[in-house]
Image 1 (tube, rainbow, N blue to C red):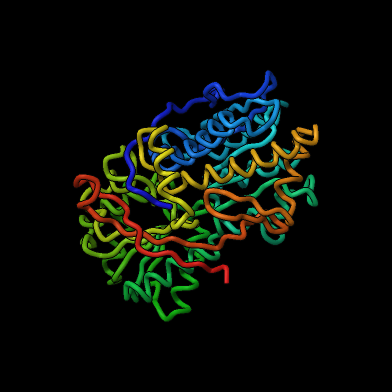
Image 2: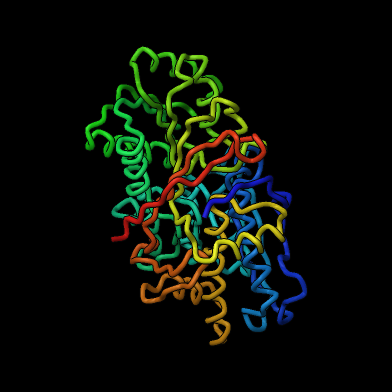
Length: 412
């Protein structure tokens, strides 16, 4: 699913965008909310997912997929000072549920934001599909039940990315078995996602026989990782794992490793650092610079999507950029929502509840750009695929880029 990338198009702001081009089929309008962090360093990660959603809406309008309706996107940006902001994310979801013409939403991108949005959307009965959330507690067990306490039996949140109880171990297996690493130091950004994936990585790495020589939490606003990295240097690690996102310090920590005498060590992370090429402002490789060499990351979704070339051609024609890590996932979430809209329209029942029930029906299979997708009883995807990447600093005209290495299907 990953391709070489350049900068994304479309300005990000709190705006309503009509994402159609003459293909609408009637005077009535249905809105799909898009809730992502879309400024600063966050844009390098979330912007391509937004664009995937917009492409799906435009194509559905052109084809007249939802009979009698034109689809629009309400795009809300919950980044503050270039970082996702959970409090702003909650406000954005409140805005979406308060607009009765918004019948579903795509997003959010970060698990910490999902944690505060799900109770709001659940109470309102608004279906939301995330292309990128991976924290298991958003759906599973008692933690997931607490988030949907208002309507516990009406699942309204689904995701097409698999979870960190799969992603974290996959990166640990890659580190230990493929890269031959045995002694890792870990930093996490203290977030729902960052701490969660670091915990999952650590548990699997030690289970395999590896050793965690040190672990530190770093506030997302950290501007100097040298004290942590210097401490790690004395512990003689053969690698560093970062649990978190680029905007919270993932790129800066890598950039500062040479100053602490750790410059030649492999650097690993999950999909939080897996964004665009070094030519894109705010991306991991752009921030880390030459120190980004020997970095490794993952994406909690399938790389080898059906007919990837066709999707890339359409996406590039629309945005003058190649798809990003979660472009196809953003497109797939929107495809799923639009299919439920079309089914509801055919029955004359285009309501939030009809769309929610249609998407979360465990008997339904959705044909998407990712391939067939079903959701289980708590809204998790049937696709259990992790894709693994490494940096190539000669790629993208010498700016550096993430290059696909392998994917692993844990679906059995």
